[in-house]
Image (cartoon, rainbow, N blue to C red; front, side, top):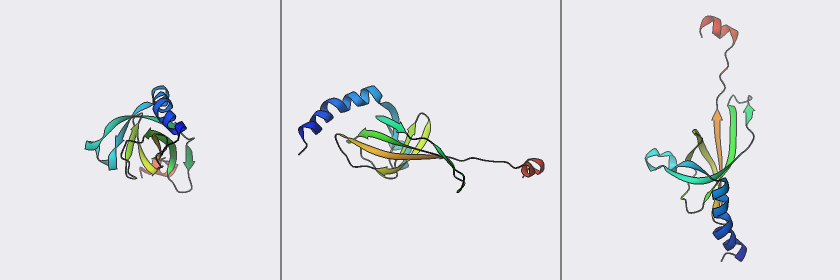
Length: 120
């Protein structure tokens, strides 16, 4: 049974949080575009970092706070500000919301002088 605080948060603070800081994002369940829907979520991005060691380019991570009424899966995709994000992990429902850890990678393509000269 939820505490009084949890009930108050879910009934009063959560709607205010989504109204004040929420934005429209597209939820693509299990990556199936035909099942996609626009939902309101709070997006909190982390600082991007460059992974030169593994050649993955720039890695972006963030947290997405969504209503716990959504059915979530580890294969879900999200479109936020025109960028596609993948679900890394779904948190537990708490206080009427779920924190979804998301990631996207932007490859970095480099061209050496040899490749420019020879077209390779």
